Image 1 (cartoon, rainbow, N blue to C red):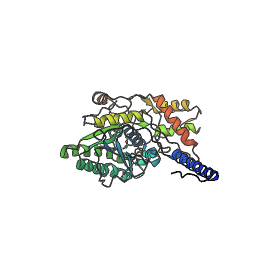
Image 2 (spheres, rainbow, N blue to C red; image 1 turned 120 degrees about the vertical axis):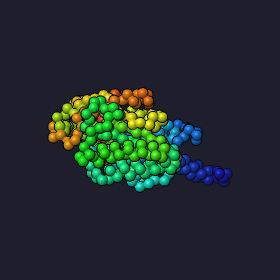
Image 3 (cartoon, rainbow, N blue to C red; image 1 turned 90 degrees about the vertical axis):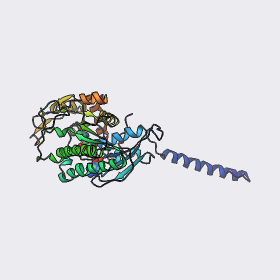
Amino acid sequence: MLYPAKSATDETRLREKIQVLEQRIGELEKQKKHFPEVKFLSYKDRKRILITGGAGFVGSHLVDRLMIEGHEVTVADNFFTGRKRNVEHWFGHENFELLNHDVVNPLYIEVDEIFHLASPASPKNYMYNPIKTIKTNTMGTINMLGLAKRVRAKMLMASTSEVYGDPEVHPQTEDYWGHVNPIGPRACYDEGKRVAETICYAYAKQDHVKVRVARIFNTFGPRMHMNDGRVVSNFIIQALQGDPITLYGDGMQTRSFQYVSDLVSGLIALMNSNYSQPVNIGNPDEHTIKDFAVIINQLVGNNSKIEMRPAMQDDPKRRKPDISRAKKYLSWEPKVGMLDGINRTVEYFRNELKRRRHDERNVFLPEI
Ligand SMILES: NC(=O)c1ccc[n+]([C@@H]2O[C@H](COP(=O)([O-])OP(=O)(O)OC[C@H]3O[C@@H](n4cnc5c(N)ncnc54)[C@H](O)[C@@H]3O)[C@@H](O)[C@H]2O)c1
């Protein structure tokens, strides 16, 4: 309340004080956190969704999409390969919660849906501690299905094209049982995911838990780790730094890469569908690894050398999803072209490489 001034000097002093206060309020307003715009959903349409591994590459993009759709999202992550910065733009939002939780331990919360993504995903990370990878995929999946059973939630498990191993069927259809070396260096992940699928269907059969299984093929995009050794991130970083691009084997092995926003649309479509059998989610646009190296090198424009290295053990020779099932049951197919996706990713890594100080942020805001 402004008291009546007794003299002209009093009035000037008061005005000066008010000016200082107004300035402070202005500064505080500027510091107020602005969130990406979130749709309003009434409480009957709003779902409580748990995303395990939500601070990772794929998980964080899924968080963005579900938050923007207006749902309440809880992330449970042990930050083995995930980072808080992938979801920091949601810190403080009333619909968002981040739990530091390892899925090998049970979790007791109330949710309607679970997207179970927690698991290291790149060979370098899943081979770092193979026993922990097996525990995450088996005990972690049992714990999340236990939660789904208790609270009657629907659960989607992020499986992988690695369940097909080094495939003898091309392109890979969901009814192909795979060709996996059960004692090779990749088995902790490949067999871990295969048994995770088995556990999902055991819970579906025995306890009537509603399960969805997405067999995810290679995916790339912003927020991939800089140094986890995945093909696309490796090539982009090497090309941006003008270093030689390293190819393992003869480079003629093929992969089909999808952009992360397509994967997110596929996962949500699968969760919302009534289809409970496994579904391939990937982009059937198949290229040799050598092609990728050349394309990325050209897009970055630094003219890096391409260097050949010995092949990795059990590296699949061909990979291409048959996505007829996803088209038929989810009306889903990828939309982002490879060059467009690579350009967006190169831009992200270019900014990432420019960082020199902790407070120089490279926040990749949701693509709406
Ligand atoms: N990105 C791909 O190309 C691809 C392909 C096939 C399948 N997938 C599957 O998709 C999921 C996400 O992969 P991504 O590429 O985002 O990998 P990522 O490493 O970026 O994310 C995995 C997340 O899980 C967390 N995590 C690992 N172990 C955990 C544990 N025990 N408890 C809690 N959190 C744990 C990590 O900290 C990380 O945040 C994984 O299940 C992966 O197997 C990914």
